[in-house]
Image (cartoon, rainbow, N blue to C red; front, side, top):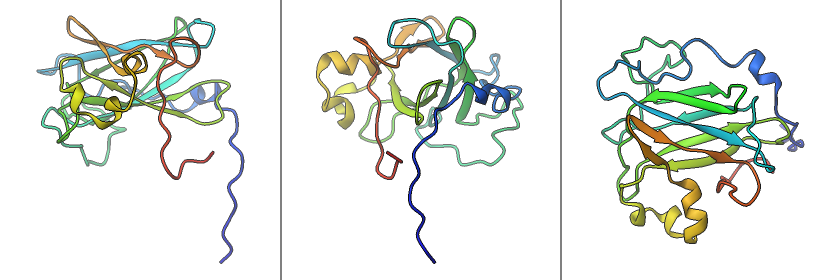
Length: 184
C-alpha cells in the first residue's frame, strides 16, 4: 500500500463555530459540583485585540493526577468529571470553563493542556496553563524556559479559580508547543 504524503494545512476557522460547540461543552463538571473552579481568560491577536471567534479546548487530569479514560465526554450530566472541554470565545474574546483543579502528574507541576483554534492559523496551537503555587521548578518544560517566557504559561489565581490569557503573537506571545508527528 502506498504511503500518502502530508498536505499543507488549511486556514482554521471561523467556520468551526457552526458545528463544533455543543450544550455543556465548557462544563467539565457543573458549577455547583463540590470542588468546582473556573478557568477563564481572553484570547488576543498580535495587535493586542481580543479574538471573538476562537475556540479553546482543555484536557486535564482529575484532582488525583489521573487522566479520565471514559467514553461519552460529549454527553454532560453536570456531576461526572469529563477531563475535557471546549469553549468558543464570545464577542470580547473571552472563554470560560467550569472544572476541577488538576492534580500534578509525578515529577511535574499541575497544568491544563490547552489547544487553540482561531482564524488565520494553519494548524491548531498547543500550550499549557500551569497552576501557580504548584512545584513549577520541578517541571522540565518550565525549567527549559527563561523567566519572561515562562510567565506566559502560568495562570493567575483568582477567587474561585484561575485566569489564563492567551496571546497568539506579539510581545506577550504565549509559549506554544510542537509535538513530534504534528504536520508542519
